[in-house]
Image 1 (cartoon, rainbow, N blue to C red):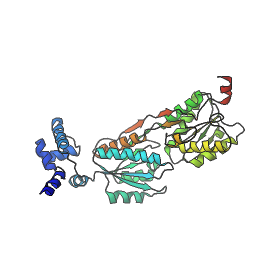
Image 2: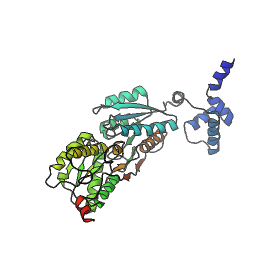
Image 3: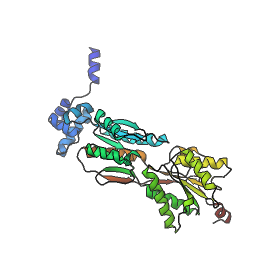
Image 4: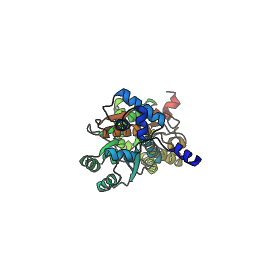
Length: 350
């Protein structure tokens, strides 16, 4: 008997019990739980109080049977060079799904993932919508498939936004412009720039912001100071070697992410180039790498988890019938020891 009572005590409340506590029909409880419109505010508040009092947790599968929805969200991502980015992104998406009792289903995608594979994932999982991360978010073949299949989706950090689609991302252009302003304010005029993976919209936006920052100070961009990269450590090493072969070497280098900046710092140490005494270095993202290098990196912090959380919220709202929205998040400049005035200015006290 005691065992039966203990088991009964652990049983979750039923929707019928919630309805009885709130004094409404089961259908009204369902509408409130599913965040459907046309429920009077006082009724909604009464149901939500009953849900909280009884610790009621609707099962996503049961909700799906009633409304032909699975209450699950798919997330497509490409394996990144630096895992902390995807870790923070998953954290934000998961927390948003948990807050709205949705499941989050992950689909790692190789670089050449085909639309057919995405279609197969959507059909097999029956997700209500899909989160697209960079660089998949800019794949027109995949967005076209989702549009044609009438599958809701939200883009995270796309290169271009479409007013018909939900999209959330950082203001990469302004963040890069601010970083370039900071480097210029220290007195640097020969600034190297190592680009990121060209498949990522962020790489193009960060270069655009850098060029804007130079123009604001009346400086023409020197093509020799802009080198290709891939958002990885090796790109930083290769970039430093390429820039150091120039007749007029840079006094500062901005890399498109922290992994690349770390490669610059290590390659500089190997060549006996002092950072920041001879060469200042800056990165982007404020990943753990930024504080693991010596010296620690000046960088830009983007709110990755918050961006993913908001993208997931907006996707769920779109699925429920709300219009698509596009939102941009500000970034923060984080100044650390890898940046200093150029040596000539330090010597003159300027």
